[in-house]
Amino acid sequence: MRIKVIIVSPKYQLNIGYIARVSKNFGVKQLCFVRPRANVKGNKSVMYAKHARDLLESAMIYNDFDSAIDDCEVVVGTTGLWRRGYHSGKIGVAERVLRQINTGKTGTLGVVIGRDDKGLTNEEIEKCDKLAFIPTSPEYPVLNISHALSIILYILKGKGLNMYETAEPEKAQKTEIEILFNSFERMIDVKKIRNKAMVLDTFKKMVRRSGLNRREIHALLVGIK
Image (cartoon, rainbow, N blue to C red; front, side, top):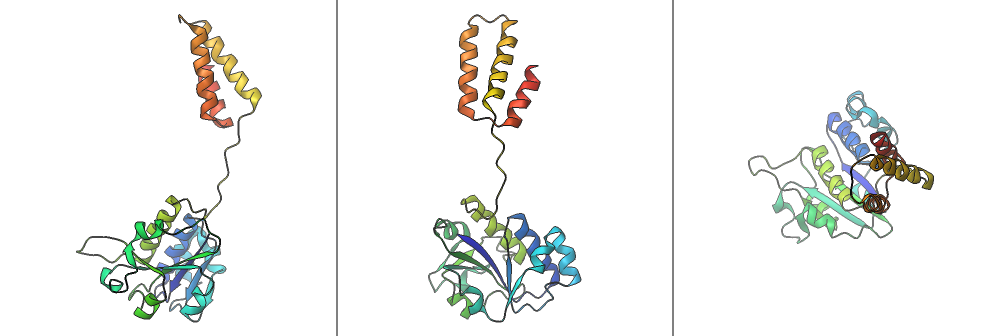
């Protein structure tokens, strides 16, 4: 399932920049803004985005909320105020709400972040399928929108949603594993070990079970030599 981050009418360039930055941290490919009140590509937006400027350059701008969520199979809104969605029955603690979503399905999951000064309107909340609440201190319960987004994306990452691609470590070659075994055998040959065959056999089983990559094999070889 693809992630679509939708920011509704942000007021401050600083927050727009931080939204881009945290989105880039979690591998979000595109940002969407609904009627932004601040310049998405303004100097401060770009400055606070740091290396996520490309997300601001490619951002999609919508004139209305309905258009922004039109291609989403599931829409999850966010709020720092529990009472906002209590009567609708769709609100829940963010971790529980997000873990109930079947992210293995095809389609788009819309994550909606409300205004940095007023949040989402009641009408916008009604158009969301779920409403995620992030518990905080009752003394100061409302999170900055970029902080809220980072928590939401972290939960989705923990759920296994592939929002980004990471390079897999290169697997060790069979010949490299044999070199490791031979080096280990030579090392124990010079030590006073009663049952060297058992020690060597145990070491081989551990290495094969662990599925070490090339970098790890080379590190062991340096240690043994």
